[in-house]
Length: 138
Figure (cartoon, rainbow, N blue to C red):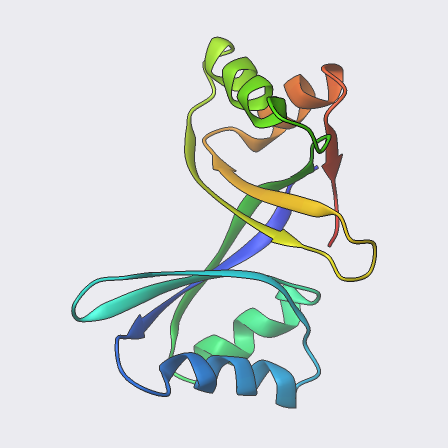
Protein backbone atom coordinates (compact mmCIF):
# COMPACT_ATOMS: atom_id res chain seq x y z
CA UNK A 1 0.00 0.00 0.00
CA UNK A 2 3.06 2.25 -0.09
CA UNK A 3 3.54 4.90 -2.75
CA UNK A 4 6.82 6.04 -4.29
CA UNK A 5 8.59 9.19 -3.16
CA UNK A 6 11.51 10.75 -4.97
CA UNK A 7 14.33 12.29 -2.93
CA UNK A 8 16.69 14.68 -4.71
CA UNK A 9 19.79 16.39 -3.36
CA UNK A 10 20.04 19.96 -4.66
CA UNK A 11 22.51 22.78 -4.27
CA UNK A 12 21.04 25.53 -2.11
CA UNK A 13 21.08 28.18 -4.82
CA UNK A 14 18.63 30.23 -6.85
CA UNK A 15 16.95 28.28 -9.63
CA UNK A 16 17.74 24.77 -8.33
CA UNK A 17 14.13 23.99 -7.46
CA UNK A 18 12.87 25.55 -10.70
CA UNK A 19 15.22 23.32 -12.70
CA UNK A 20 13.66 20.17 -11.23
CA UNK A 21 10.09 21.40 -11.56
CA UNK A 22 10.63 22.50 -15.15
CA UNK A 23 12.30 19.21 -16.10
CA UNK A 24 9.25 17.34 -14.82
CA UNK A 25 6.87 19.78 -16.53
CA UNK A 26 8.64 19.41 -19.89
CA UNK A 27 8.15 15.65 -19.58
CA UNK A 28 4.48 15.92 -18.58
CA UNK A 29 5.02 14.64 -15.04
CA UNK A 30 2.67 16.10 -12.44
CA UNK A 31 3.96 16.95 -8.97
CA UNK A 32 1.41 15.87 -6.35
CA UNK A 33 3.30 16.83 -3.17
CA UNK A 34 6.68 18.24 -2.26
CA UNK A 35 8.75 19.22 0.69
CA UNK A 36 12.14 20.94 0.86
CA UNK A 37 14.55 20.79 3.80
CA UNK A 38 17.58 23.02 3.60
CA UNK A 39 21.01 23.53 5.11
CA UNK A 40 23.52 26.22 4.22
CA UNK A 41 24.91 24.33 1.22
CA UNK A 42 22.23 21.95 -0.04
CA UNK A 43 18.54 21.05 0.05
CA UNK A 44 16.77 17.73 0.18
CA UNK A 45 13.72 17.82 -2.06
CA UNK A 46 11.16 15.12 -1.41
CA UNK A 47 8.27 14.74 -3.80
CA UNK A 48 5.47 12.50 -4.92
CA UNK A 49 4.74 12.60 -8.64
CA UNK A 50 2.22 10.84 -10.86
CA UNK A 51 4.90 8.95 -12.83
CA UNK A 52 7.86 8.19 -10.54
CA UNK A 53 9.11 5.41 -12.83
CA UNK A 54 9.50 7.99 -15.62
CA UNK A 55 10.77 10.82 -13.41
CA UNK A 56 13.64 9.04 -11.66
CA UNK A 57 15.63 8.17 -14.81
CA UNK A 58 15.13 11.71 -16.14
CA UNK A 59 16.51 13.18 -12.92
CA UNK A 60 19.50 10.83 -12.82
CA UNK A 61 20.26 11.34 -16.53
CA UNK A 62 20.11 15.08 -15.85
CA UNK A 63 22.94 14.72 -13.35
CA UNK A 64 20.88 14.93 -10.17
CA UNK A 65 21.49 12.78 -7.12
CA UNK A 66 18.06 11.18 -6.84
CA UNK A 67 16.53 8.02 -5.45
CA UNK A 68 13.09 6.51 -5.06
CA UNK A 69 11.66 4.90 -1.96
CA UNK A 70 8.40 3.85 -0.32
CA UNK A 71 6.28 6.15 1.85
CA UNK A 72 2.71 6.01 3.10
CA UNK A 73 0.02 8.49 2.12
CA UNK A 74 -2.90 8.71 4.50
CA UNK A 75 -6.14 10.64 4.52
CA UNK A 76 -7.20 10.67 8.17
CA UNK A 77 -10.51 12.04 9.35
CA UNK A 78 -10.47 15.84 9.57
CA UNK A 79 -11.09 16.62 13.23
CA UNK A 80 -9.04 17.57 16.29
CA UNK A 81 -7.17 14.57 17.64
CA UNK A 82 -7.05 12.48 14.47
CA UNK A 83 -3.28 12.85 14.12
CA UNK A 84 -2.83 12.22 17.83
CA UNK A 85 -4.62 8.90 17.32
CA UNK A 86 -2.60 8.00 14.20
CA UNK A 87 0.81 8.72 15.70
CA UNK A 88 -0.07 7.24 19.10
CA UNK A 89 -1.19 4.01 17.44
CA UNK A 90 1.96 3.75 15.35
CA UNK A 91 4.16 4.48 18.38
CA UNK A 92 2.31 1.91 20.50
CA UNK A 93 2.89 -0.69 17.76
CA UNK A 94 6.62 0.13 17.56
CA UNK A 95 6.51 1.91 14.20
CA UNK A 96 8.88 4.89 14.07
CA UNK A 97 7.76 7.89 12.02
CA UNK A 98 10.91 9.43 10.52
CA UNK A 99 9.23 12.46 8.93
CA UNK A 100 5.87 13.75 7.72
CA UNK A 101 4.64 16.36 5.29
CA UNK A 102 1.14 17.24 4.20
CA UNK A 103 -0.75 18.72 1.29
CA UNK A 104 -4.30 19.39 0.17
CA UNK A 105 -5.60 17.92 -3.06
CA UNK A 106 -7.38 20.46 -5.22
CA UNK A 107 -9.32 17.69 -6.92
CA UNK A 108 -11.25 16.58 -3.87
CA UNK A 109 -10.24 19.19 -1.26
CA UNK A 110 -8.92 16.48 1.05
CA UNK A 111 -5.83 16.76 3.22
CA UNK A 112 -3.22 14.05 2.89
CA UNK A 113 -0.16 13.25 4.96
CA UNK A 114 2.95 11.57 3.59
CA UNK A 115 4.73 9.46 6.22
CA UNK A 116 8.20 7.98 6.04
CA UNK A 117 8.21 4.97 8.33
CA UNK A 118 10.61 2.10 8.83
CA UNK A 119 8.13 -0.56 7.76
CA UNK A 120 5.47 0.85 5.40
CA UNK A 121 3.57 -2.43 5.00
CA UNK A 122 3.26 -2.95 8.75
CA UNK A 123 2.22 0.67 9.29
CA UNK A 124 -0.36 0.49 6.49
CA UNK A 125 -1.87 -2.66 7.96
CA UNK A 126 -2.06 -1.15 11.46
CA UNK A 127 -3.66 2.04 10.20
CA UNK A 128 -6.15 0.31 7.92
CA UNK A 129 -7.27 -1.97 10.75
CA UNK A 130 -7.90 1.19 12.81
CA UNK A 131 -10.02 2.68 10.02
CA UNK A 132 -7.48 5.20 8.72
CA UNK A 133 -7.63 5.63 4.95
CA UNK A 134 -4.28 4.65 3.41
CA UNK A 135 -4.13 5.59 -0.27
CA UNK A 136 -2.16 3.83 -3.01
CA UNK A 137 -1.97 6.73 -5.46
CA UNK A 138 -2.19 10.51 -5.39
